[in-house]
Every structure is written in structure tokens, then in C-alpha cells.
Amino acid sequence: MRKKSVVIIMMAVVLGLMLTACSSANKGNANKEEAYEPKQTTAEMVEAILGSEAQRPFMDLEADMVKELYHIDPTTLEEYTIKTPMMNISTNEIAVIKVKDEKDVATVETALKQRATDVQKQFEQYLQDQYENAKNYKLITKGKYVYFAISEKERVDKQAKVFEDFFVKE
Image 1 (cartoon, rainbow, N blue to C red):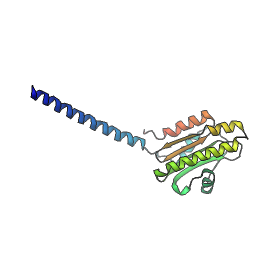
Image 2: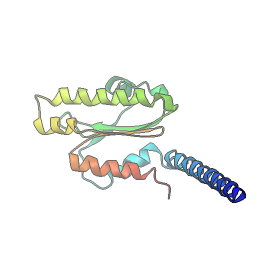
Image 3: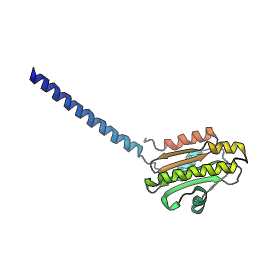
Image 4: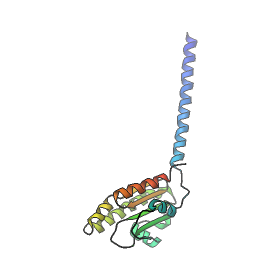
């Protein structure tokens, strides 16, 4: 009877170790999927996110304007595409930013929240519908990438889904 007990205990221990090993392996795979990096450039991502939707005219921000309007040091960025309205009658803007070092993501997120606050203040007493858009901005981080958009709620939600789809391994 003792030998049976010992054998059963040993089998339970071995089975437990095997299950733990499988669990760890799955966690490793999950982390790899989270770290999946898209093949598209930030410009290609923004183009796909905007798609064929009718948009107000945008202008691309150059490095000096990124620092001034977005409070981000462009030297910390590997790549970025930021489009803002050409005329100051709309809050619609979009940014896809890839940082050089993942430690800078939090700084970029803080700067983008400040940008949203700046836009809100700008439109608070000016155009109420644009002020509402600015309050409903989207900010999503995926690894080294940060997505920021201000637009109508339905549009910004749809665009955010397109951004997130870039990080799903096919």
C-alpha cells in the first residue's frame, strides 16, 4: 500500500511540474505576441487608419512643430507621422509615434495628454462640437508605438481599431 501511495504522489508531482512548464511556455508566447511589431511605417499606418474617409485637410508636423505643439523631443523618436488640421477650425488630428527606447513611452503619453488639454483649452470657448471631440481623444500604446487621435467619437473608435489591428500577428 505504501508503494502505491509513493507512486501516486510522485506521479502527481511530475504532472504538476509538466503543467507548470506548459503554463510558462504559453506565457512566453503571449509576450511575443504582445511585442509583435508591424511591418508598416508610421506613415503607412496613418494612411490606412484614415482610409478613404472624408477628412479635413491635414498638414504633416515637422520636428520643430512636434516639439512646440506636442511637447515631445523628436530625437527620442525613431519614426513618427503627425497630422494636424491646416486651419484652426477643427480638432481632428492623428499621430502614430514610434519611440527609439520603450522607456520613453511614458514621457510621450504624458506629452500627448498635455496636447489634448491644450486643444481642449483652445476650443473650450470657440467651437463647442470641436471641444467635445478634444475631450474624447484616444491614446493607445502598443510596445514602442503610441497612437493619439482627436476626432468624432465614432470615427476615433473606428480608427483606433485599425491601429490595434496592426499588432495582431497574422
